[in-house]
Image (cartoon, rainbow, N blue to C red; front, side, top):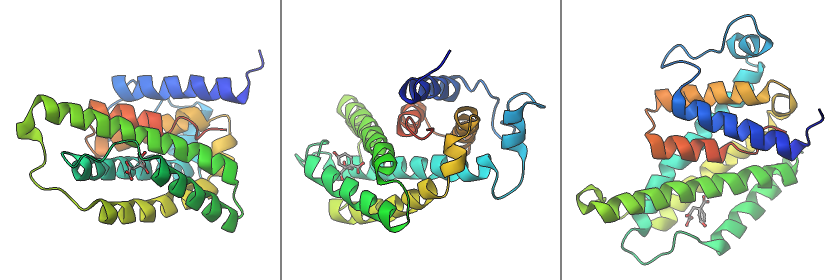
Length: 210
Ligand SMILES: O=C(O)C(=O)C[C@]1(C(=O)O)C=C[C@@H](O)C=C1
C-alpha cells in the first residue's frame, strides 16, 4: 500500500505521541527499540552523522523551546496579552524561512516544522494558564519581560533552523519516525518532562519526518 507523505506524517506523529506517553521504548538511560533491527542500528550507532545524531538535536531543541514556552506563559499570565499572537507568528515564520534560504535549506519544510513548534508552544501556554487558574499558588510570582523572552526564542529558532538544515537525509529516511521517537523519549526522560510537556513535544515534532 502506498502512503502519501502527509498520511505517513500523521501515522508517525501518532506513534511518537503514543510512545512518548507510554514510554513503550523503555525508560531513562536505556531507550532503544529491539536490537538487530535497522532502526536499532540507526539509534545505536555512535557516529556524529547517524540518523539519531542528526535527529536528536531536533528533539532536544524542541524541548528547550517548550521550556521557554513556560517563560512566555509566565510573561503573559495576568498581563492581558493573548496566547495567540498572529503578528509575532508571521515574524517568526518569515525569519526562519529567510534563515533556511541563507543556509540553502528548504524554506517551505522549515516553515511547516515551525508551525508545529508554535502550536506546541501554545499547548504548553494554555496548559499552564489552566493549571495556574485552577491553583493560583502554582502561578509564577514574577513576570518575565516578553521582549526578552522572545529574543531567547529567536536565538533558539536559529539553532533549530540549522538542525533542520543539517538533518535532510535523516528526515527523509524510512527510519525517521522510530529514530525521532527514540530521541524524543530520551529527551523526555532526561528533562523529566511532565505529561503536558511530553504531549507538546510530540506536537512540536509532527512534521519533522518527510
Ligand atoms: O511570542 C509569543 O507571544 C509566543 O506565544 C510564542 C509563539 C512561538 O512559539 O513562537 C507562540 C504563539 C504565538 O502565537 C506566537 C509565537
